[in-house]
Amino acid sequence: MRRLALSFLLAALAAGPAAAEQDLLLGADMASPAMTKAEMSRADVEAMIKAADGKPIDLHDKALSGLDLSGLNLRGVNLRTARLNKANLRGADLSGANLEQAWFIKADLSGAKLADAKMFGITARDADFGGADLSRSMPIGDFKGANMGGATLVDLKGGADIRNQSMGLMRAVFTSVNLAGAHLKGADLGRSRLEYADLKDADLTDVVLMGSDLSGANLTGATIAGADFKNVDVSGARLIDLRGQDSAKDWAERVNADRAITRAPN
Image (cartoon, one colour):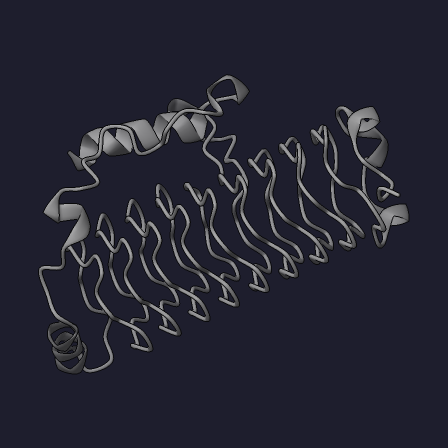
């Protein structure tokens, strides 16, 4: 089941605008125990952490959905292909964790530490990353509808890797994600999907947006000094009261610039 679901996920992440409505969860039985239950308790995980004596623990492919793991030290943990749907990871330390192909649908990761985490193929729809630290992480996955309000995403690596042509153009899917007030200085979001994302008052200083889709996004009050807008689709995007616009790169190279909203409604 997981292989089938992953194949759809990778196909959708690599797809172009014509597949924008494709359901990335197609092929996964989201009502199955593997996706909704936990095979371990919090006490079991705490015992593993204690026994590891400071070394990263291995929870790869575990069913951990709904589990309360809030505040735990999970630095470097291996959660590859694990299922943590609706899990509580509020304030947990997942720095340097391997979250590749893991499931975090509607999980609570608010205030969590996710710096340098690997997230290739992750599915985190509607998850809460509010105030979390995702600095230098690699979120090449599906975050549609997630909350990242006030989060730190400095030097994020969510841009498409054009060298990986055998699997298509893999990139971050931040469709309808709340990034209001988020700190994205120096982040790479080249060719990513940011349709209808809320970037109000976000810090986009020196962010690479080249070739990304910002159609319908709200950038009101955002700081865009040094940000790269070459071939960025801004159709229907709110580009109101922007800060640092004069130093934005390739501002004239935006796509559908005539369809952007540049003035607040009366």
